Length: 625
Image 1 (cartoon, helix red, strand yellow):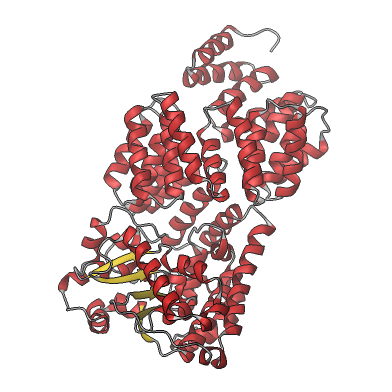
Image 2 (cartoon, one colour):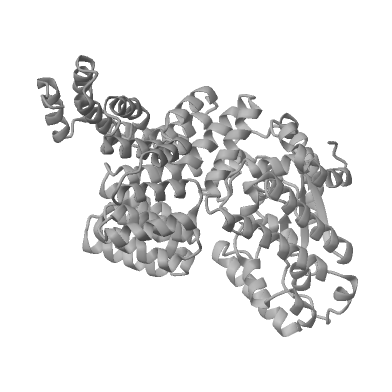
């Protein structure tokens, strides 16, 4: 761009003033008049990049390199854009073919490795980059993200602190900093630091957004929501605060407010990266699947790869394109599993812990239990079953009864198990310790349901099906409800649902690991049911969908509850719930329907490798494969 055309100069001035839309319009005219000007091509590309329009920038970068193949700036920007668009193979080829000096190619190789899930290699390169340029806030942030993935949260906090000291105005890094504190067990410290930050820099809406993220990680949904409301009250033009609030109201099933916030974001007059995904989620929730699919596909993959793939998969599933939907869910899980071998190791370890418990669960072991006095208070009921088997639907139905206090996936039982310290101690439990553990259980339960002792407490925790020994040891007369559903539908649904890829959740990143976890959980469940005199009842998902009253009336009798018609109106009950923390939050507000019954048959080819694992369980329950 030796002789800059007047229209290009005008575009540059507009860009300096921040009017990128008009700058692009004028720059396009300049490029049309001078298509062989590499400088104009580079300028046009950079305007699109500033608007995060990576797909639009790509052809200009390629055209510029065709004019000047040795241009290092265009080469590096092309690689950066390709990484952002998820074109990782092409990005790697460009880097390998063009050997450029300096630190920037190393930074880009680190970004490429990070996106490919080669975290340890990326970490080493980021360390090399920040050692050469300690003011590279972007690489400090990416180093922290990699260290989280490697399970080194305290080192990640240090890296994030360096990044935020250089650029404190990056909410995404502040969120990752919060996650590192949560992983390190210092979430309360993070909250204190953020409150001080908000006080020192009032009004700092970003600090409130970060506080909301920490509160959510700590399981305080209402406090998180209030922090987001505060952030938006402080600055109604803060796109990050509005996006976070939009995601929160969607999970609370407030679609009208989601629509209003999306319109507010659209009216800001500047690009909001996540807006197309929010609009896609709204369209999907309203049954506009074609429109939702188009919106999700329009979102750049670099913004939120996992969510984009999830929405695309959900839309394609509802539109009947099973093969393409499955590939989208594969992409979603690949993105969530970018920690590489760490997630696989977590999945294997979680299954091994179940196998170890099963091996210990023998008639001789149960016979060795010392006598323990039963509780004098009313015993809780437990609702268990493999995830995605219908437990959220059933717990919502049961919430409709005024005599119940349903607590959904809170850590009462986990705290008790932690205090016990392993199944090997169960036989030696004495009455005083058992009473202390029961007291611990109810003290924790009352944090979530203050009237837990005066009503029938129903502890809904799907994977507590693996904790029956602890349940029976402390609460021998406790009713246990087992939610049963076709194993293939359950496993497929878990694979298609986005869970946190930690602990047991790491299994849901692949169909094989999901099926193996199902097998381990079911083996432990059946072993416990055979060896313990459980007071249990099975509720079958397919029967519940077909005739809810016929399935619920016997269950109410089993639980000692008077039959009430309110038990059947799950949608009214769901609407009263401010927050539903499970992935089924959207489904429980819909009318009961059978659209997910037998869905796996449309994915039979994709599920073929895991059918040998699931077929024996299907046969045992009377399902066909």
